[in-house]
Length: 337
Image (cartoon, rainbow, N blue to C red; front, side, top):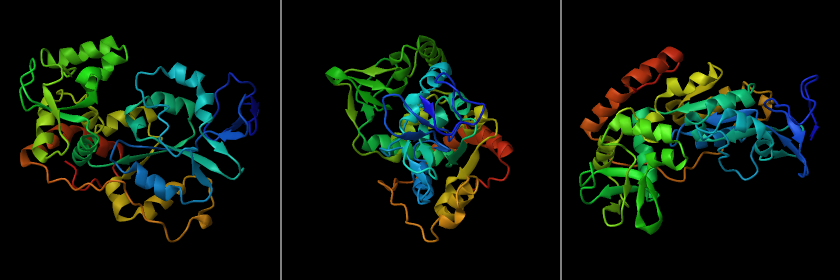
């Protein structure tokens, strides 16, 4: 491996760990690769795709070659040491041709992933977190999973689950269905799975439904989301709920993050993008005055939350939202509990 832009006397061999924005040549790969200078995180349905769309309209900022989410830091159980050891595979996702270009990684799930590894591997990266009101964000994510066929309704009593319970997960072979929390066990993380059993005692979230005991909900309604919340663990291990505890999730970054309220992004995306770009070494004069509008792949238009559901979510997030206000007093957070 040959370093193109080392920061003397920092990096001299392949065992060293680079800094954000460092550009390298890799063994068995032609070309030049630059680790991200910008990392956009958030949670599903928060607005990370929209912000990325506006940031990338600067001609000197590019994304990874395939334009998809990289997910290098998405698994919270992947050891930091392993991720630091295999960093060249991460760098290989970001080929560049011009020396004036910086790279961007947009992966929403980093917010709930291994943030310690992200901070350690890219200590100088400009990290931007898009935060949406957690109750509405959870509702939007639920509908996203419903459209993808990952939400089911139990049709007959199965252990502690009553008919009508709503779960989110994935289909297995033989017509079975695994609730999302079973992923803890699938990764061989028995300790985490045992903790989930303990949290729910006999009503644990690691259910596997056999064929004929459930039906896939092709269309979801507000009542289905309410039943989903009723079946979820009390501490919110499900991604939909846990991803809204922003202050706790951002703690590993130690304040080295730019926070964006999704409501501000919707009201004036250009101003938000320019504020973010202001923290980078990019020529502001090259950013277009008239931006190409963002067109989402799906437009959320679910029916309003049930009043009881809204109260339940307010109870869940009142404490986490207060912690976020202490962390970022400049954020307006209008309409948040």
